[in-house]
Image (cartoon, rainbow over all chains, first blue to last red; front, side, top):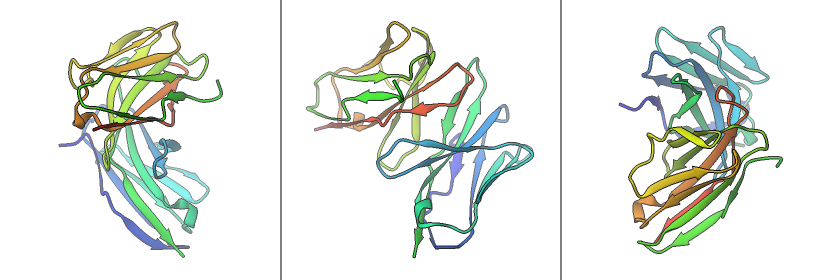
Length: 111
Length: 113
């Protein structure tokens, strides 16, 4: 079983749609949680951290459920520029912040 | 520098040859990480450096892979006797310390023919 699992998609949505991505992780000792965005043939870039209380950054809302080991990302009012692959990332303890990446969910926003 | 710099950006090599990939982290970042990403796959952890030492090299796939870091700065990842399955994008990241967020370089796309 992969340590971080995501639906690979693709999610094809029209502009203005609301779309949600889910992710599960297997290591109950995981301590930090993130969503990264990766554009085609580019490096991953941090989108937002995810906190137990839930957090919002503009059109993006992230939620964490530690009991279920489940992370989500909600994008409201999708823009064409949101088209990318969204990587669910979990930090595990072990003396340093080791990040384990999911394989990503691809989003395509069309006009 | 302003960001994490990797070179070369692209490398095509013949099977069986050795290759060296270079990473120049953000100045002052003590932690450095190597990952690789095969086509359509997620990032696979290879090795972590804190300063010049590598406390976690558990992700190196075989003894053909090695890495070093000198002066607490530049790191090189060496792949000996390359195989076609080594073809991937090799990504380097650095962070201010061992607990910090990562900044990635733009990667080296390695193709073994």
